[in-house]
Amino acid sequence: MTGGRGRWLGDRLDAQAFLNPKNVAKAVFHPAWIPPGVDPTVESLKRARIICGTVTAVGVYSFVQGGFAFDEMLENVLTASLVLLVITPLTVGVMLLVWRRRAGHLRRMRTPLTNSLVLLLIFIGSVAVTVTNWQMLKGFGFLVGVLSFFGGLWLTVFVGAGAVYVSGNFFGTAVVHRCLPPLLAMVTTWLVAIPDLVTGDLHGLSLTLGIVFILGAPVTVTAIALLEMRRLRRHHGIRLGDHPATLPVPGSVPPPPSYPPSGNPYAAAGQQPPSGNPYAPGPRTPPSAPTGNPYAAGRQAASYPPAGNPYTSGH
Image (tube, rainbow, N blue to C red):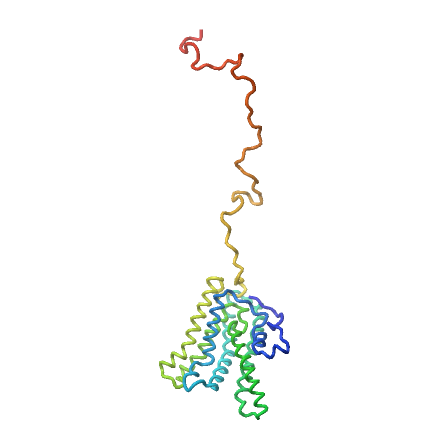
């Protein structure tokens, strides 16, 4: 678990940057305290999850009956935002109770949780302003209507780009626990889709086609989120039920030991093994050849076999 107060904006903003709503969205909805990605595979799964989550929030069936229904899309986006406002704190609260039973301390999470809540409120407020602007556009005069139209376009791009960033880290909850974003994505997509099935509101589609379109995105998001959590568990040792304070830092896995091991495995602790070749001969004087003639007179070499009778008595 990381995070701190630090600075908020991920990128510096100047007057020229405000002309591009994507730059503003990146600076606001991807703050500097958001942790970097774990590995490329998790990031790819995250992008796929973002696409499926966007399909759920917008509503695929908006494009089926009679073309693109802009008003219905606005209603779906606003509904999804209200679901986020309720379900995100509730889900995180349930996980806090689980972690508290296992470790018992949650004080270090106060700052990252506060930052995540602020990011959630900023996004939902932006969505509410954008939807309200488009819904009230017809009641404005010409001049105000033109300004409201271009302002609505800017806000739409800003919210759309921001949705991509907050869907990846799910309002910065990855700072608290890496498994929170996929968990929240699963819960949110199901809560957005299930009411249509419960109420039977299939928006003019047949039963089979309605079920396919309504449940297709949540099922896909769930499958991708489970793969993401499986990757985090198997390759990084990060499990959803583990307290964030006990989790390993991604990328901090120690390297495997070198083979063969260096040094003397039988040496006592703190004792340095002797240097050099242990099988080399010690310092000694090399043998020298005897001087003189070994066959000279005065030297009587032993004769073999010995002379005389070996069975005779000593006298």
